[in-house]
Image (cartoon, rainbow, N blue to C red):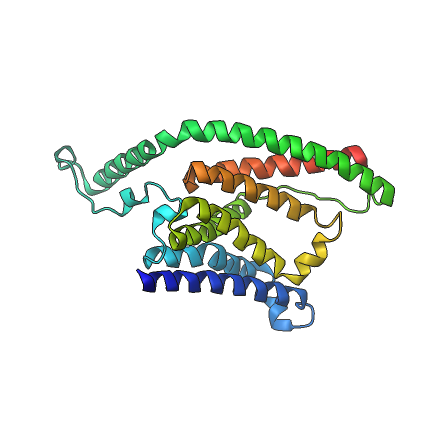
Length: 266
């Protein structure tokens, strides 16, 4: 178990280092041809997938980080050896596979059911708090920018894609699960996951420069609010499958309220 903990700590360390190196190279991509090549098109898509999904997946399949610490509730149903009930014996191989898959999915949903009521209540509270926070922030921001005469100089446009939401949710869950396993405490895992993401952000010099700007730091404030909101929900409902649509909903709300405020300020 000790060796696994050291391996997991190494995975987290490598993840943070890769993020910092990528940020530094991204700032210099116009001066380095090979960096510019890997920062565009299909190459950057593959690298992003390998970082956000590949690293946690490798930790999962090698047994370094068990599924439940990532919030993958019910995954053991799919990984369990296939045993076919007697009523499946007369079916063809494809039909048997589909029937078994349907049974496994049903069992997974049953694993999720106890958390759904709690999740619904938490989502309503999170939406309310986030909405009030962003309305208050928008009012404050309007006065600041009006005083700076920079109301129309910057625009946060577009909404996060489903791929971006999945990448972000899995990445944060990886850090959260790592601390949870190392500390053997879900609460410490949630708090530690937030701290690790914060450390990752702070070690990015480009990010620090951006956050100091009251305008350019808007995406960070959105991500920070979503990080705190989704982490708080995970504390009570440690299920990444259910958290993914909630993550997308909170991101959608935050970006919508930001762009709505910009339209009124324009």
